[in-house]
Amino acid sequence: MTESSSTKLLNGDACRRTLNGKNASKNGYVKNHCLFQQSQKYSRSGEKKQNATHNPSLYKKPFMEYFEETPLLVAVLTYMGYGILTVFGYLRDFLRHWNIEKCHVARERDEQKDFVPLYQDFENFYTRNLYMRIRDNWNRPICSVPGAKMDLVERVTHNYNWTFEHTGKVVKDVINMGSYNYLGFAENTGPCADAAIEVTQKYGAGVGSTRCEMGNLDIHEELEELVARFLGVESSMAFGMGFATNSMNIPALTGKGCLILSDELNHASLVLGARLSGSTIRVFKHNNMQSLEKLLRDAIVHGQPRTHRPWKKILIVVEGIYSMEGSIVRLPEVVALKKRYKAYLYLDEAHSIGALGPNGRGVVDYFGLDPRDVDIMMGTFTKSFGAAGGYIGGKKELIDYLRSHSHSAVYATSMAPPVAQQIITSMKTIMGEDGTSLGTDRLRQLSENTNYFRRRLREMGFIIYGNDDSPVVPLMLYMPAKIGAFGREMLKRNIGTVVVGFPATPIIESRARFCVSAAHTREMLDTALEAISEVGDLLQLKYSRREKPLPSLGWMSEESLLQD
Image (cartoon, rainbow, N blue to C red):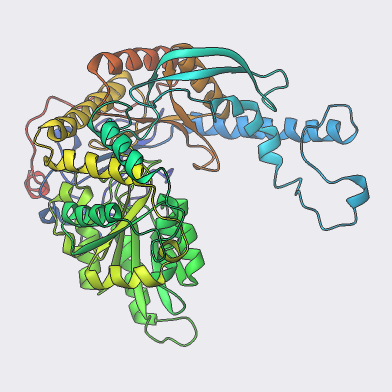
């Protein structure tokens, strides 16, 4: 994400100067991943397309993404910050070794010094000396429904975040800008809660068995039929844990002699599943179609290492919305490549299902594609549906195979009945089968809130990553000291946020991640935006040097812009 200024993006987009013809020395360049441009100011200068599949005809609507280059000064100061923290970390380790400073870290007893070490001191260096200094920003106890507002248990630390004590007080009505409650179904009142209570009284809270033994309830089969209908596929299967839906099913689909092509920013569950499968894994650059196509060509031309035999199977693994970048997969192009090179496509819609598309059916619905073009459709119920678990949808033959070969299907306990009912009720609401327009209203509200929140943050001068339609909104912080400071200052203003740093992100790209919800009112968003702007001024976070766009002249296709 911090390519040199002279480098063009591999997917055909150039790194353009922020000012027309002027040297933007303070910031370098802005990376706008876009197939349609809004005004002449950002029109292309006729650069040659480097990827045959980078074709605007594949898209039925504008596709805009922003990845502004890290300012050079900020990058240097960030590296210096980590360097200073590292030096002081080694100094504190030296003081702990000589018992000058009290050591709270788990380590080997003296009588075990000849044993193979259980705790690796060097591997825990980052945790001891960097993470612990800002640990108070995570794992805060919540004592209410994590809806648009929530209550937090107040806690204090007397030993610099090594341990915490509850004060007995509760911080009331904190605006929740961190939960994946995209459609606002995380609630304890209303039709979903009432239906879940009724099912709990009928079935109980748990099942106590696997699906293939005594844990297959009629409500599970009803859920799977509904999910298949919602997705527009032949069949589906539900699982009790979203993470395991990926990590336990990918090994059932691929194995030795197979090739997995994985986006470099794929979720840990996808990475783990790919590793457990025993397949060969090759990584392509994030959302970069030229990188993916090169790997596909090389795989077909060269085959397997050493033997050069054809791969048994080539599986492309991507996500709908990438939860740390806020970007949306270029699915039309991925599908075109998949068809051209006869590969299979595994689409993880954990964050996009329910949150994208006119009907809330995810990224496939968002781009207006045929669900049959995606071989394996995966998603979770933990975000838009306010529940837990995950699903896989596709052809009936695929689902029948997974029922007998997936570890998550054979060995895992069945989904709890109240959870299944929560999903059924919320999904029917989205589909409009509850007899109301509540689902449609929430989808529209989420879209309006997302566009409003992103637009206001960009106008304030923050560097915001991702797609305009993505409810995941990363705000760049960069420096390690600002990670903790931003989270604490926002909580002082009664705003709950999620801050993220290394190793979850590149070392110089720490960020705050906001998740917009349909449950947020315009008043809540304005309150949050006012606090963000105030903290941004306090911590000097308004790094953007991007010139504000001119008033819209209407959406124009890439061909017409190139002709102009």
